[in-house]
Length: 512
View 1 (spheres, rainbow, N blue to C red):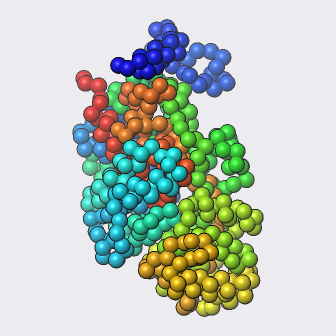
View 2: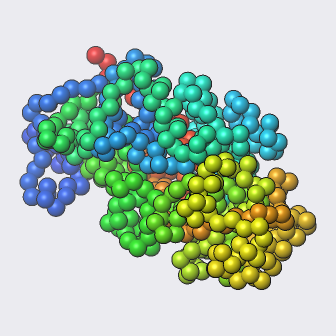
C-alpha cells in the first residue's frame, strides 16, 4: 500500500468514526439526512419485515438488463417500482439504439458506410467534451452489439430496416425499434425476464437504504408500500439501483444547474425525481457531474413531450433534412450535438423552430401510417412546394425558398460553408416534393450525472472504494456521457451496464 493510499485510509477511518460509533449503538449510517430526520438519530432495524436475495430498484432498460443477468445465473430477483406501471422513462422513449454493428447487418445491407466500436467510443468521448470516464465509455461501446442482439434473438425484438446518423455521431448507427417506441424494447426484455421467474412489485417507493457504516455492506432498504406502510427489507445478496434520473425534479435540477429553470418543460415521466441518488449519497455513495442536464432540442413546443414526431428532427438531418427558425433561415448545423442545437434554438428567442424534410426521406426514418397520424392532428404539415409549406407554417416564403435553394447547392458542392455540416452520399436534397415540416423546441430530457460507478457496475463511495453489495446502472449513474449525451446512447448505456451490474452482483454475492 503506497503512502497516498495509507493516508486516504486513515482519513476515511477518522471521518467515518462517528458513523462507526453510531453503528455500534445500533444506528444507521445517514450522512445526508433531511431536515426532518436531522432532529434525531435513525435507528437501524432490530428485525426485518422480509428478506430477499437480489433486489433491483427500477423497471426500465437497466433494471431489466440486470434482472435478466441475475436470473440467468439462477438467482432469485425482485424488482421494485414506485410507479403503478413498469418501464419508467424507458417505456416512453423513442427506442433509438446507437450501435456500430448488429446481427442483422443493417449497415452493410443499407450501404451506410464504415463503423467500429473504436469510432463509437471516440464519438462519445468527443460528444461529452471528454468529461466522460473512458473506461465506462469503452464498456458501453464494446458491449452495445451483444445487448442489441440479445433483444433480437431472445426477446423477439424487431427493428425497422433503417439506420440513421444522429447529431454528434460520425457514422450511421442509429437503430430504430419496429414501432419507433421504447415500449417495444421493454416488451422484448419482459419476454426474456419471464423465463427466469423474475418478480415485480409496483407502487413500492424506496424511502431509505440501510447501511451501518462506511466500510459496511448495504444490508437492506425501507420501502413505502401503499396500505402496507413502511417495510424494512433485508437484501442478502445484492442491491442494484436502476431508478433513472431527475429530469422532473425541478428543485434538484435548479440546485445543480440554475439555467434549467422551472419554465422549461420535460420529456420525462412525472416520477423521474432522483431520490435514489440522494438515498445512496446518504449512505456514503459518491455522485458526479449532476450539473450536466440535457435538453432534447426537438420536443413538441407546446407540451415538451417526446412524441413520435419529435423524433423526426433527430433522424431527418442525416438524410438531408434541415432546421430553420421563424425567419425561414437555418441557424445551426443540423448534425450538431443536442446541447449545441438547443442553445442555438433558445438564442432565437422565438419559442419554436422547425425541421423540414421531403417525401423521398420518409422511408429512411419512419413509416407512412405513423406519418399520416401526425398529419391528421396537424403535428406535421405537408405541402407540394416550399412556398406553400412556408404559408402553412407562417414562415416568410422568399426566405425559406432561398434557404432551401442554398442548402441544395451545398449538396452539389459537397460542403456546407454556412455551418460546416458533414455532407454525406446518403443525404437527399430538398429538390422534389411533397415537403413536410414539424415544429420543435428544447425540453429537459436526460441527466448525464449521477452515482459514481466503476467499470464493474459497483457504486463507488466518496473515498473511492466500492460500496459492498451496491450496484447501479442507467441514467441514475454518471460518467458515461460526460457533459452531453449523444442521441441513441442512453439505451446501450442502460442495457450494457445493467448486464454488468447484474453479473457483478452475482459474482460478489456473499456466500451462504
